Image 1 (spheres, rainbow, N blue to C red):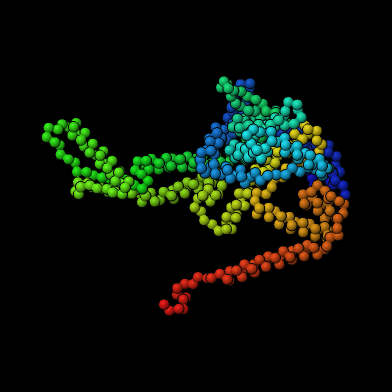
Image 2: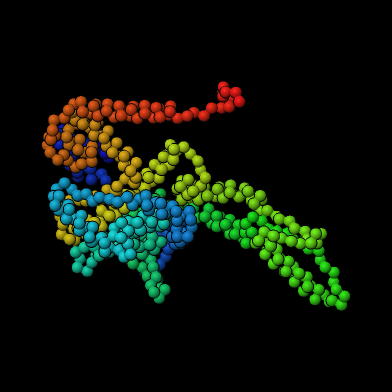
Length: 482
C-alpha cells in the first residue's frame, strides 16, 4: 500500500507500521488547504464578530415549538417520537472496573441526576426534553453546569437552538456563541465553553454545524391546513353544518297613512318574529305557517362538499411527508397489509437510531464529566439504549443467537481466535483465555435443527387451524335446492 508515494508495510505478527511516522508526516500539510465557501451573508455584530447565517431562518424554530403545542398533527408526531425514542438506557464501563465500583458509579448517576433539572423526573424527564429539542430545533443544545465546589454536575441547561451562533476561527474550526437579550431588552452575546457546552446537529449537508429542524418542511402544508379549517369554520358559522333553511314570506301591503319608516319597521318586526317562531318550531319538531304565504326550502351543503375529504387527505399527506412520519400514524385513511405496516414501523424505529446516537454522545460526556469530578477512576463509559419495542428486542436477540452460532463455529474450525470471537460480539476482550467448558461441535447444528423443527411445527399447526375454519361458498356452488 502506498500513501503519498511512500510504500507502507506492516511487520508480521505485530501491530504498527515499519515506516517511521516522520516519513509520512513530512508529506502531509499541517493546516487546511481548502477554504469554507459560504453562500450566505454574515450577521455583522459589534465586537467585530461575524456570525455565519444558516440555510434557513432561525426564527422558524419558535414557530415549530408553538405548533408542537397547538397543531394536532405536529403535536402527535412529537409526542410519539419522544415516547418511542426514550426507551431507557444502561451505563456500561470498561472491563477494568470492578463490579462493586460499577454499582457505585451507577448509583451516583441515578441519585445526582434527580437534581439536574427542575420540574422533571430525573434523567428520564431530561431525555424527554432533549428528544423534543432535537426535533423542534434540529439539534441537541445543552450546557453541563458545574457546581460551585467543582466536584460534579450541578444541573443541565437546555439552550434554545435558535439562539446559537457560530464563528469560523483561525484554526479552521467553529466556535459557538449564544445571542440573547437581557431583561431590559438589550442584546447580549456569550462565547460558550466547549468543555461544558455541547451542540449535536441532527442533519445538514454543509460543514456549518447548525442543524436543520426536520419539521421545517411541513410548515407550508400546515399553513394551508389552517386556511382550509378557517374557511370551513366560517361556512359553518354562516350556514350551519348540514345546510340552511330558506323561508320566503308574502310581503304585506302598506297600510293607509303608514309612512316608509313605519312600513319598514313593521316588515323587519315580521321577519324577526317569523325567524324566532321557526327556530322554536325546529326545536320541538313542529313548524306551522300559512299556505301560499310561506315558501320553505332547505339547502344542503353536505352534498356540495363531498369531495372535501379528498382535498384534506391530500394536504394531510403533504404534512406527513414534511414531518417525516407515515401518514397512517397520523390517523389518515391509508390501508395496507400487515407486512407493509411492519415495514413502515421498522422504518420509523430505524430513524430513531440517529436520535439515540446524539443522546448517547451527550450523556456519555455528561456522565463521564460528573464521575471524574467525583473522583472515580475508569477508562471509559458507554451508554446503550434499550430496544424500542418487544418485537424489536426479539429481532435483536434472534440476530445475536445466529451471530453466536456462526462465531462459535468459526472458532471451532480454527478460523478465528477467541479474541476475534469476543470482538465479533462487541466485547473488548474475552473474560478468560480459554472457553469455560468444552464446546460441542454439533451444538450449533443441533440448535439450528431445533429452531427449524419448531418453525415447521408452527406452520403445521397454522395450516390445521385454517382447515378447521368454515370456508364461505358462492351461491352458484350450493347443491341444495331451495
